[in-house]
Amino acid sequence: MKMIFDSSIALAWLVVRPDRAEAALAEQLFGKVAAYGAEVPALWFSELANTLLVLERAHRVTQQDASSYLADIGLLAINQDEEPCGFHQVRILDLARIHRLSIYEATYLELAMRRSAVLATFDWPLAEASRAAGVRVFGDRP
Image 1 (cartoon, one colour):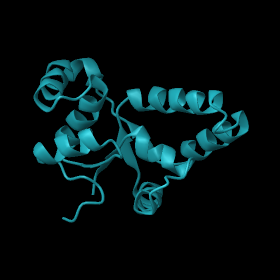
Image 2 (cartoon, helix red, strand yellow):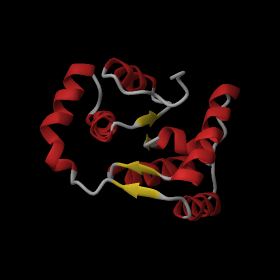
Image 3 (cartoon, one colour):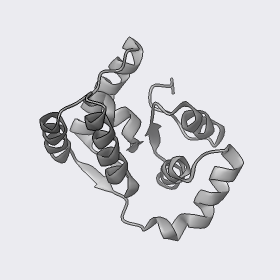
């Protein structure tokens, strides 16, 4: 199963989700990514680092926590989409308009559609848009 995932679910590997079902889903995804790898759009790395910085500034994680987390993430087979987002800009903009998503959210949806992959996210508008577009969401029953 091809997997695309966003930073919202990846960050649950560092900051535990208060909802037990979401925490379990994040743990399950970690096992899948550790075993089989996954693909992310290029913006994923910046999103992840930015959120870590926000968490540091809010004193929810330390610099050491963030550094250790990034080192652990670096051990996983997380592959960056090799096609520049600019190649798919028109499609991404269309998806954002149709599904009332941000461009960032639509970038994940476009990649999942292009790769015929499952999308893992805790971003509920993105999850709903994915389902509406025919993309399976990780955690849904097949």
